[in-house]
Amino acid sequence: MQWIQDIFEWAQQGLFETAIQPIMYSFGLGAFLENGYEATGWLLVGIIQIALMLAIIGPLQRWRPVEPMADAASVRTDVIYTLVHRLGLFRVALFFSVEPLFDAAFGMLRVAGMSTVHIDQLMGAGAAHPFISFVIYLVVFDFVDYWIHRGQHGFNWWWSLHSLHHSQRQLTMWSDNRNHLLDDLLRDSVLVVVGQLIGVGPGQFVAIVAIAQLSESLQHANVRLHFGRIGERLWISPRFHRLHHAVGLGHERKDSGELLRAGRSPALGGHNFGVLLPWWDVLFGTANFELRYDPTGVRDQVEQGRNYGRGFWSQQWLGLLRLVGRA
Image (cartoon, rainbow, N blue to C red; front, side, top):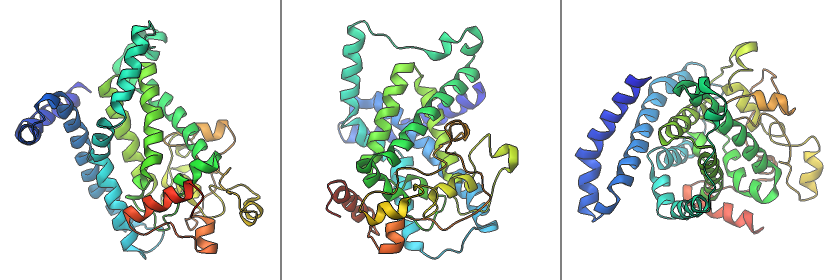
């Protein structure tokens, strides 16, 4: 894997020196060059991801679509979400808002004598190999992500934000990042804390996020694709995740109709919450491996016409109103 890292670092250095560094100097941000170099890495990862999406996932969608394109406008909004997240704009916002708070908090903990736990080192000399440690950290993060996802569906206040993600009735490879920004802030904050506690290296963290995001783009794609009886149980496929988005099935309890009529969230149950690995759904009884491709969306949106917004800002505003019970 070293040659891949060498090529990436060469490209990151070149992009930083030719484009990012001059821009930072022109805006008087010379004191943040180290952070700018790190942001350049995220930008480069995003560019690579988008290139792979267009080159591989896009043709798959045209080859075996689940449904015809009927709402191009909503897909264009999803493209905006993808660009904001994959090109590092959201992470830049985090850097100037909450990241200094995390750095200060962990700095205080280290001063108090609380050191980071390196999980790979605890598991013996064999786990210290870069590839083995990477796999270990990926599995740990995916386990945490599974429970974050359960939380997004398990608490009414969190569902009021996360339901924006499920309101897309035209799933495509761009739909993964269609989230309320506050929802993303909560999720990323948990993952950052976990990363600090278990001692994952910056390079490993970037790689884990990059692989997860690219896989999630495929999961949301409008493609009739599954990985077979064995493969479906090793890695999450578009078929597996689409069922999670299915109206009245993937993200609702069996008594969802009664809950909805009583004015309560029906999203306190469901299936297929895994992010990368279906193992956790199997282990905790939330897996559904039925070979089916259902319409997607939220029940109150489909049956009662609840408005989740059309454009980026209207979706963000309505999410906040839902959070306080005003929409």
